[in-house]
Image 1 (tube, protein in one colour):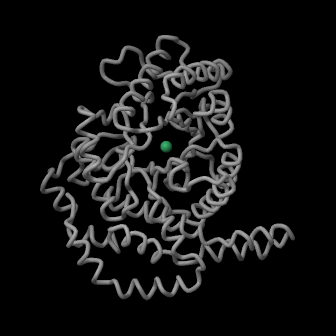
Image 2 (cartoon, helix red, strand yellow; image 1 turned 180 degrees about the horizontal axis):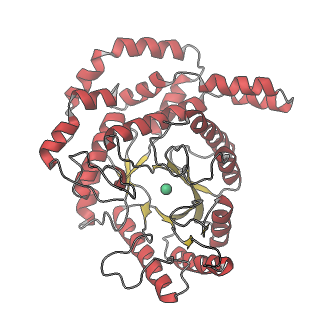
Image 3 (tube, protein in one colour; image 1 turned 120 degrees about the vertical axis):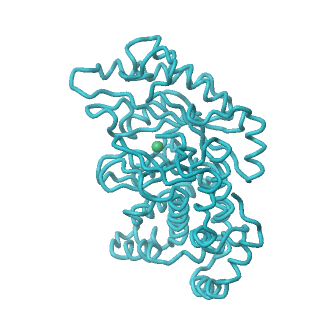
Length: 424
Ligand SMILES: [Mn+2]
């Protein structure tokens, strides 16, 4: 469903004076408040097509009802999110879970919702029906050349779908690795994977990028063939100028300094994109900012500083995506919370007094440096984010409007109680 404009306008009017008071209060303390709001308006976060249904675990899946039954309904859901927050103007498709049957019609529908197609994602971590060779022992790394070829061909097929939709990047995440010592020759696995990636790279159009995502462990528990940023960096450096590392926040070992990783990848011109989520222990895929919003801010602080140092466009030069999915929340409410958390972390990072911080660093004033960083983090930026939303035609309080208008109840009425969206 999509709201009519009057519903949003009426909702915005109700609490506008309260909002204005908060906005005026915070604006008085910021020199360039309009510049900050313009940057917030431009920033868009892609929603993955697999996050619109209740996520599964290896133990079970509990559908919340009214889940999208096909790609068109998934796009409708992202369209609704974007209408509410004006910051979810892109969708990231997973092939083969969401293969467009008619690319032209899919593209037209996306345009109707104001959506673009972000990175397309390949899947060689599951076997599909009628697939000739199994990925049980890996895909691009496989000891059997024919299996590798099948996985390469699948990735090239995904690029073709992406071209038809106007996507400009391919994300490759590999479950390849090993579960036991001795199972795999690490060098052979690396070289096979590199060779396979080179064949995929050769099929990329000139204006495309390929993102090589890494993950520390799971589903393999002894080794992963692209396990950390250093390994991804080695692959993308060997591949060429269209290859970049993709950082998924949940794909690190506990306490990894992700902020330092993104700073160095940006410095080397090899950071390509981001998958946002949050975690307590491992790849928990929890709502962004639900566990450690300070870390999220520290990552954004490095992103903003590093992108500014390179003269990069915050909104356009990196791929921003959410990659989360779990069992207990309404997926659309969860995504509204995730986008809100990302926007606030970004807004706080924009408020860091970079000149003062640099001066403090130059004289090793550690105490002052912390004060400067935390002053930005402890600023309540919600009214700035809300103002950016309102100026773009979105809702003052998306989550509240979603609930008062009983969106989930309506979706259940339309689609049914027992629908299950494609995905994990
Ligand atoms: Mn990911």
